[in-house]
Figure 1: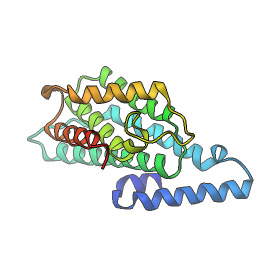
Figure 2: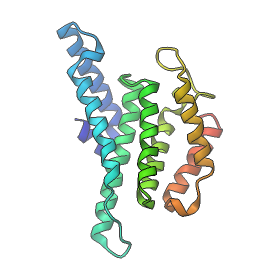
Figure 3: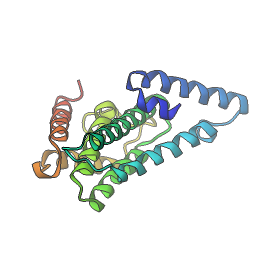
Length: 194
């Protein structure tokens, strides 16, 4: 279901509601807490696998249609995964700000270890996709508090650093599409997530 949902952005909300219902059914049947369900554990494992895929961006050559198709399919899958993760955070509520903090730091680790413009662009687009959806719930300055009513100072610092990074991204390190997505996200952020 996770793989299908990540490929079908139109149905992400439906899939996340279904996942939430399945977790609740498992909880009731086994009389356990949400954190102990097999579905939640599988979901977290699949999310971790998603980030491993960011390392392996297929090479994109402008004059090669086949490499363009592979790269486009890769980007669609990665962005679909980020949108799914955002909706899982909002609907299923199995992630905390600490988890989101690890996600953001994971993107920066990937970017530090790879100097590929494609990978950097994908990481920036992934972060923008994620926080366009969940920013209003997680932004330390404009957003609501974490699901448990707590603010996570480590996450707050990481989030503010990410915003500052977006504001200073150099043209030569990202593709044009990523620059536009970053610009759109910053406008969305500055207007307090309308």
